[in-house]
Image 1 (cartoon, rainbow, N blue to C red):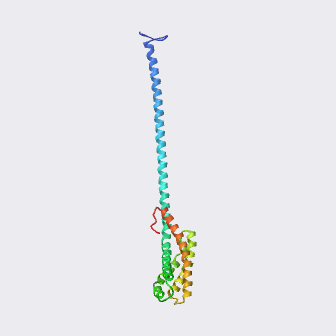
Image 2: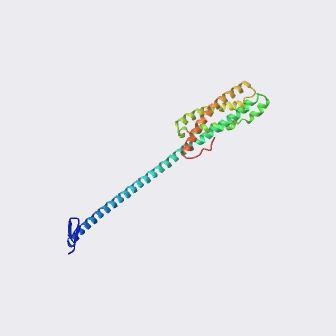
Image 3: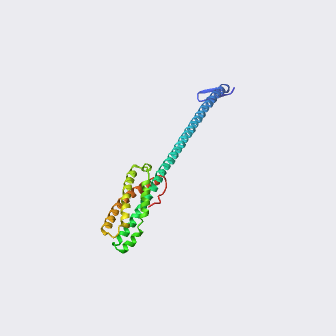
Length: 213
């Protein structure tokens, strides 16, 4: 039987074979354990990644849901503010037109002719429309308070408009009406600015570019 010498050790071939088989078996077991661990780690990483992707998907769906709800809320608020803002803008236009006529001409025959164009009927219609608005439908307490002021000013401005339009040639009476209308119109413009700001804020939050000025 052949002998093999490794350093100070001498082995016969028959004796070496079982050792090689044993070492081979041990290596095979070690490789199997290593592969199993690697497969387990890969499976854990995959499971962790899939779990995180599921969480990210749920979070994104939740963000989209919240975003849609937020957009819908701000749009609904803006939709309630817009018509009231337009009504106040209309009143502001009527008052500005009346003041332009009354300030530009002394109380004479020319003024008597021009003041026929003062929009008294429109003023009455706008005042009626303001009175019909239910303040409980106004979405913000600030705007509720502003609208209550607007309702009071609307009644006063209507009287001033009617006075300018039909008070005859009593210059002092007309001047007084013009002055009062001017003061109240300035207050209305402050209210109008507040309504515009809140309207534009909610439109912006709803992702709508305001096309009003």
